[in-house]
Image (cartoon, rainbow, N blue to C red; front, side, top):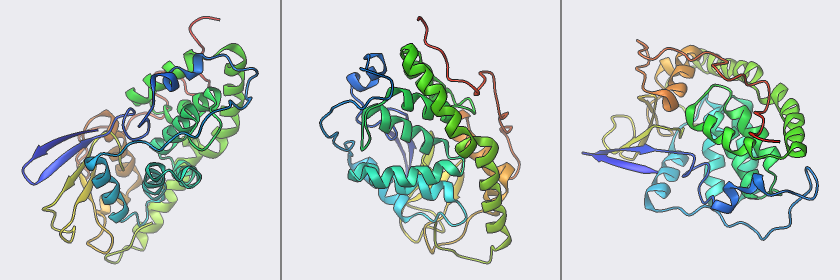
Length: 286
């Protein structure tokens, strides 16, 4: 994670080697290349400690906990999952990441994949990791695609088959075709009920925290695609973030660039850009 200080605000650049992949060792990164006794067989291992959190990560996690996620179950799952991941509560992290994943949150899906790759709270399994990360990469986010290609390309044939089978079971529940529809309904319902300040139910490539926000009640506030995420009980969501098209554009902008919600300056990314997301990428050599 990289913080670029600018006056009273700082920018948090979250990469797959910090939040979702925090604490990943070289051996874990290359776990897919280690031949298991059989596809899907549990690997004996010592308990994996939670990712290390410096002062900046702790502040970001605290800010997540203080942010409103009203009307945004994707952020609810992502924020709660991240907090539990760093606390070492892997069962809780997996539970909440799956909630975020059901509402099309790609960082939650990536995080589940990394839990399987590292063996945090689950048996280390690069095939299942590949399946989740392939799902997370279906919008073509560059860092996600890089992670997918590296992990999936190292699978042996038996692991690749297991990854394909697992992906087929995940897609009907967590793929964008169905998960985005759930999220659209949640946003539309919240927009229709918008009456004032609400309590909550991002992290991504670009998140900003500021101590001079007009609606943060004196604390730090996250920004999503350039639009402020209010703290619980302090102000309310920008109505533009309750418009599905604008919201998904803002989320994509975290990984592709920047966007001004309202007058969009970054187009919504296509559902299936470039690399087909229907199949797990094959390893380079058999």
